[in-house]
Image 1 (cartoon, rainbow, N blue to C red):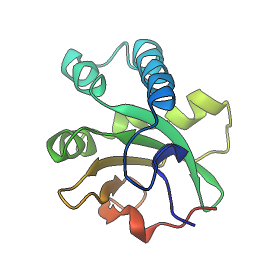
Image 2: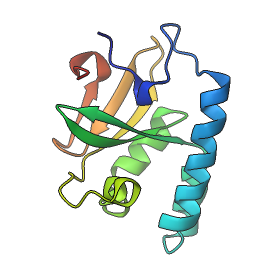
Image 3: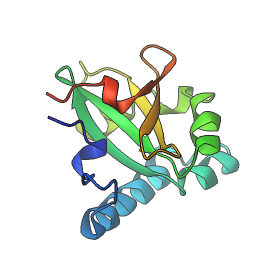
Image 4: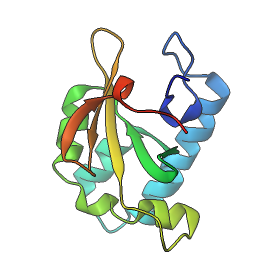
Length: 129
């Protein structure tokens, strides 16, 4: 089974319009509530992204879908504010702080910085549960 970014990607790598609106609303709500005390540049850059939660190896993972490589790389250098987002969203004290900062490369493949390993990976390397 193909791993999907937040469970809303089609095989053509295009966002479903209705789910994109839902994710954008979720993104704005998270930024307003969770990131209100962070730097203004971080909040501005996050508004260009789409947030989702997925499961990898049975654990919830926070996914930040970035518009390009530059945004993904910039966010991957500032991972501290993202620790605890899955807990914030799920109220699960036993959950991990793992996040993925992803962008779509020129070949249409999703490349992600994985905070669990501190390496860039291709989504093709991940398995959906």
